[in-house]
Image (cartoon, rainbow, N blue to C red; front, side, top):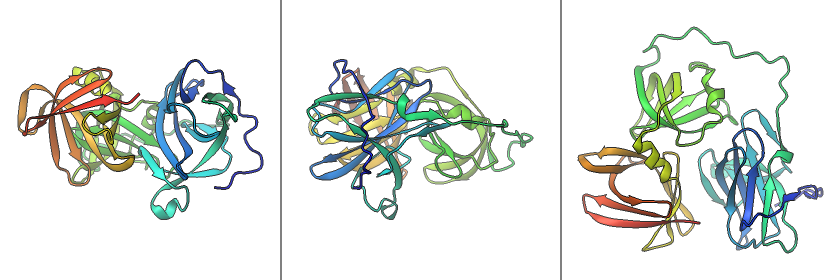
Length: 338
């Protein structure tokens, strides 16, 4: 990895407030999305994404710090990040990637990161984002011109449904946003057909936020669909929405701690022994496939095969999760990673 001579001598860490590891704090007025890079057992590793609301912090590296240098990327619509031209591999979705070379050849994107110098002996460190990300200057900006609203059915089958917001990515052309509804991944592209006012509004929405959407289904695949979006708004939280919100975060199996997953919005990203194992679309429902009553249920749709797996949610709190896998009836126990 090439590091420029102007090492981040100006990066000033905040005083530690009892946290352990590497803490990143959002002292700006809008939500930021961050990724990190670091060296582990001789390999360069990049991980993301963490969404940080204003005046909130995350701790992507937990425990006593093992290295002096770490690397950070922060993104937000309408903001520019002051990187150090240090490249790591990224993807639009949640990721853990080993190696920082030949990102595009391996099917990844390339992100430019900034170096964090935690000091020679630091065991914990906190850094604020505000000094390194600034709002873009907009001169003579014009509001998007909203074309006449198309008639429902112009681009496909009219569609209205309760959904869950996942994320947006405007670093590529065209930008896009993702929702989940009934286990399906709905992709909305900023290609001129959808309401242009929707995208700035969605840029700062947190994953897992309940939404009401309507538009046309332009294309339908096995477990995904392309949606031309005409109208979107937040909706009241239901008990199932609150249950999904409680499930957010990293969990590990009690019987095998190497078996882990991260629930981010409506996606369950699986890992085994630190290696990515797949992503499922999940939802909390009062029924799942042929099972109903005695809910709630966790419905999981394999994004590759479209297969649906059903789990009855037996118990969940801030640290423990118990799922009964159906139809076998065996109980799976998980603990929340600190």
